[in-house]
Image (cartoon, rainbow, N blue to C red; front, side):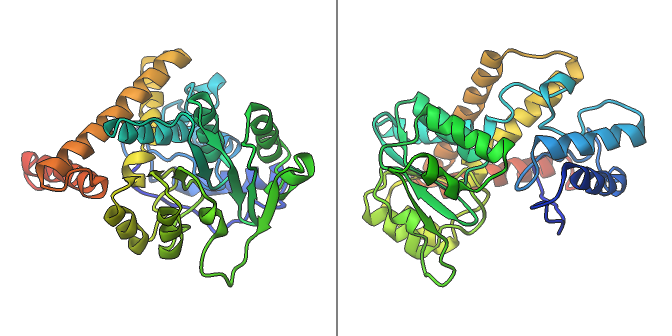
Length: 332
């Protein structure tokens, strides 16, 4: 669960719901032979949201003739969990909170950069607003918007409708909110201007390798105090080294974005128990899990002489879990 990624070369852009459904059903017809609630449990990611999970879950159930927690991210009325859509974004913010708390700081009052405008970025923005921070950027594959006034609840609601219902482009934001600016992607540029916007915190939530070494240096030069990754491996290795050398609070994706898979586990637990927990209960469990992940990473770094280095801490903590289990189970 959460240990691997797979996908396809099917491009859903411009496709109808029926075309997407047919593809998802064909994909699951083969995939169902290789997954199961106790074998491998897929969840959504880039291009795979509630709609696609629904189509695939329906096909799995049709072929196997059973209802089971084989896919997570399901809709509430057929086995999903409250907070699951929000989990990765919320968890990324909770991890940032924990890192800042060690240094006696908080997100309240901070100007924050976020990339992406999908599920992770949307709910990360929602949680930052709740905690008193101010998100000023969002992006998609075409470019990014910069709103110096900050994205408030009303603006976020508009973005959610744009991306989740109308499936539009983030460039439309400036038509609705003209005080913002839109900067298109420049493929020939050696850096992403989103990460050159002056801010206190940065949350890469779009895709892999979106923060290169120059981007990382721009963030450090502009005084960013915390970077917490909502995407999987969004920072290239050279960028990671820049963050670590600068001594900022840097939460790498394998730790900071674990909230999604954590609530996937909680969703499976609810499926097995045939129960549905309240929003507050799931959110409190998520907070507790992110706090524990932070503590494990922090402690491992300290124990091995790299105090405050979450890259070392998360890698050692994760490695030790696997290595100790292999030894306990006889190197199987």
